[in-house]
Length: 145
Image (cartoon, rainbow, N blue to C red; front, side, top):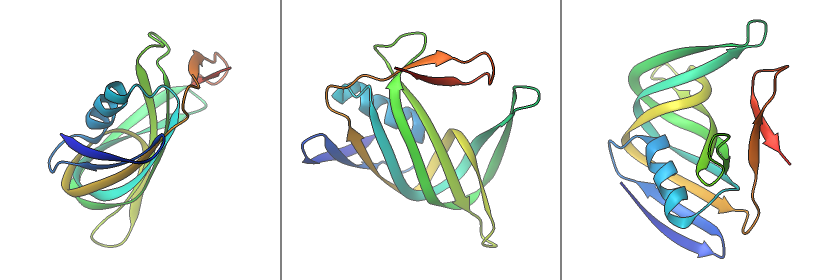
């Protein structure tokens, strides 16, 4: 599913296997090395992705799936403890992907299937723990300090 190297204490470089789903692989990695607070960034290529957009007026999410070859021009996110189980990683990832015509699409990443490569950097905030709480005003799972 992935290979990784710890390049300095608490800083990892990952290469995800072709055709794997990014969120699934990153979640497995964070479980393996026990990351519950951290940062994710990366690039790569995908053939299918589902993005999410929050409509703040309705507090409803709108999902859209794109089935086409795209380049990940930016993948940025963070890791915290899940709201329902703070001992498990919760990934909050945003992505921008470039299409064949050089336009871009993006949003909150629900899932994406690699078609080519995906290279990521994950920084573990060491022994820190970040949790999540449901914010009633926005409908979002915000940091719980």
